[in-house]
Length: 362
Image (tube, rainbow, N blue to C red; front, side, top):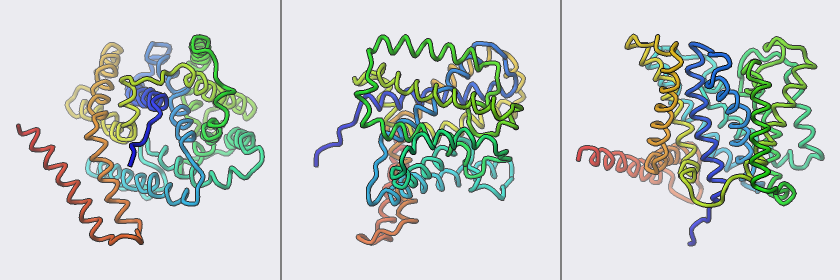
């Protein structure tokens, strides 16, 4: 069987996206203690949030397909991992805080909304593709859903709807690439100009605007203002995806490996971002987060080290092995003896862990 040929351009784009996600979350953890309004960190945070998730979602849409087994694949490849890693997140919160929420599965754990939304997008895609002008309808829905005052992130409904146009654009982009192919250098200039202008425009506004998860009322603005600003946010995100597609190289770079292992990085970095400040607080050093210089060093070193560790192939292999076990347990496979398959996967996973342990002992 021939090896699967990967599209290095999209691996690189995915790598860029995951780097921005990790840095964005690390910066966000610092801005909780002090906003540092107008600072370099604040500007970087705003810039990153304008396009990092749109880029991730655009790529997810690009690689989505409609087939007879679309829903089954979405269940296996997206929803089961969501259940697994949301459960692990719930357990980590319980072990640290002793709390178990009643809404622990219908309100996604920190950062896990993306997996739940991706499941909804891929499940609905076959039906959506049959609707005329679905892309434009999805934009209208994204704008007007902000009128409804959601009190929680229930099932990630708001972000699922608001980012759906970006997902659809990625899906249809396969047939539109030639129409959106521009000169690399012109695209670079346009990207810098767009991000600079948008960052300066949004930096003193609510960060919630770019997250697309809260109502206009919650952001203390009227519906008309909210609709206009949300349209700008969605448009900037899509334009950034187009420009970065033209800018990004198709050659192998350090981004390629990051992109190939992006899911493991995405899931596991959340623990570092969430619990590292708690460790500082426990040790009595939480006051450090009020220092701008410390925050810059913390973000730079912390995000870089976490990215380096989690981008290793062995991390993705072991995480995939764990996910495979969950899939075999929860999804019936008619063609094989499920119990033997589960036992085999568990043995392989444990063997990897033991082998890794022996390497460290040396």
